[in-house]
Amino acid sequence: MPIPRKYVICVLSVIMVASFLFTLHGVENLMPWLKAMRGLGPTAPALPALPATPALPAKPAENYTEPCYPRANIAAEVADFGSLPQHMQQFMTYRHCRRFPIIIDQPNKCAGVKPDQPLLLLVIKSLSESYSKRHAIRQTWGQEVAVRGLQVRLLFLIGVSDNEARRPLYNRFLREEAAKNGDILQWGFLDTFLNLTVKQVNFLHWLNHSCPHAAFIYNGDDDMFLHTVNLAELLLGYPRGDLYVGHIIDDTPPVRYVPSKYYVPKQLWPHSSYPAYVGGGGLAMAGSTALKFFNASHSLEIFPIDDVFFGLCAESTHVKVINHLGFRTYGVDALLASNRDALPNNYVLNELICVHKFDPNEIMVMWQKVTQDLEKK
Image (cartoon, rainbow, N blue to C red):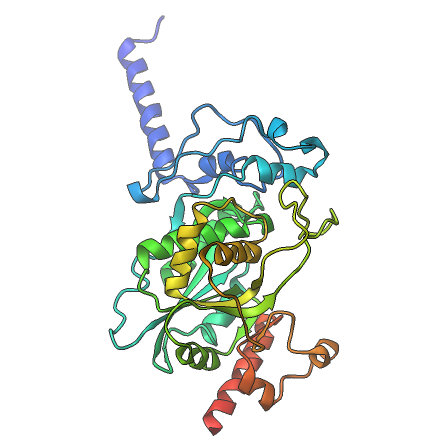
């Protein structure tokens, strides 16, 4: 006997409602879109076929970006394109992709700063899985307090983990971490080395929109130790105007050794050297200079090394690159490099701005030494 039509309609209605509720309350609503985005980032490991109409999650209008498709004629436009390693082919195919949807935002991070206290924004590049590093920074030099007349605010810049299996877990933890600490910015690009410039470009856009009044920016890695008091005194000692300071790297040739993560082919950079820039492990700039870099970035192609990209921004805006010995992006000195148990003496502490490379426990120990030294003064 045929099934009555009213029962068929009822069953179909239940299925449609269940499907809607699953879509609305799925464990990881962004997963279908993020899977599609694996082929959109400059450093995705393969060149998958893209859907004709990729689905995007609902976003506020100003956070929305059009889906970015690969350059169709890249092989014909770039000489010897087929001879390049796969990761560099991928980068060049999606090099034009620079704006991505923001997943976790902090639109009010810079609100409520007193007019008589200039804002110092600590901007730290991090990865989804690097919670212990972020925790150590929050407990030590990244505390959001007033330092020598500067009001400090902290932000961690994060993309989407390239570990697809653990990505849903990382994203859930990041949302919880952001809700608790209010210092996470996350965008929908794959968080890889070649995407660090994409990370910086998206941060500059955020800065221009959400924190254009920041007086100073410290931009660095999450395995650096920062002496915030020394940094504040350094920044306040400079006259107003452009400021772009750190460990200067000048007249450096591009790396042509393919296995190196710093490898850059001649198709990307045919010149014998890069313009002067400061090491990306830790640098400081005036907020107005960062906004100049933001404006310059629109006319510059994405470069696979982020600190070189900042150097290109400086060159195009005629901003002077300033060297300061306190920025130790290659470590404190040869003595410390050979003796990891040693800590800098008071002379080094008095001169130090930031130093690489410290794990979370070493950051805690270093901070204790710095604060004890400051209390004696």
